[in-house]
Length: 114
Length: 110
Image (cartoon, rainbow over all chains, first blue to last red; front, side, top):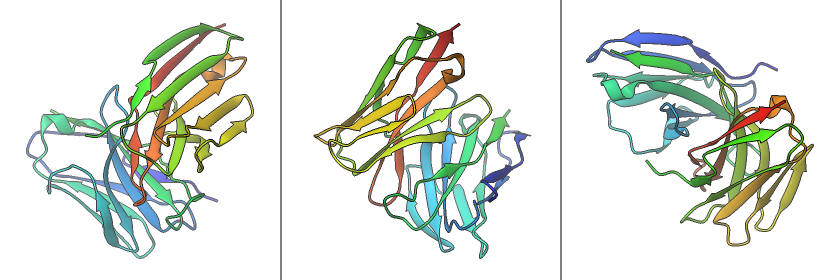
């Protein structure tokens, strides 16, 4: 069974650029959630995808957008990058949304915006 | 963004000591979770709690879901050096969204 994988591991961008982060969900999981974790903080929920549709969104502006593909992998896109977007971006996958199907996290992508 | 109130913020203890950390919320959750995060890694699920009052163990770890459904605690008994890391509590809403605490950094002195 393959766990959650994310790419790239690290990324450096400049202010105003756009970035795409990728996530492959754990085998058998159909739900993907994205989180932003600033240094010294807990992860903050960005949004969740279930069967290729956005299924819940946190308090993030529209320049944060996502996609889920038929194989349940997912992308997080961030436009017009700002310095405060520097963070660890975590992807988590889970099975059907019910008790017992908890989220398993990938190792994250460390994004630095200069 | 919304976060749970987790305490203490950090702990520095001697190997073999017991550890206790807790989490409180102004909102009710139906599920409480405890995760551990090592440097350069994503959070790893330690314990999941689904019922108010539930007490669950995983090896040396014990966690409880508060009766009011607004709090939870995690105990680690007889700590060892590999317990070092950051521990996060998380409450799960009906939509599956996780709300995390700020984390408790644990350091264990051999």
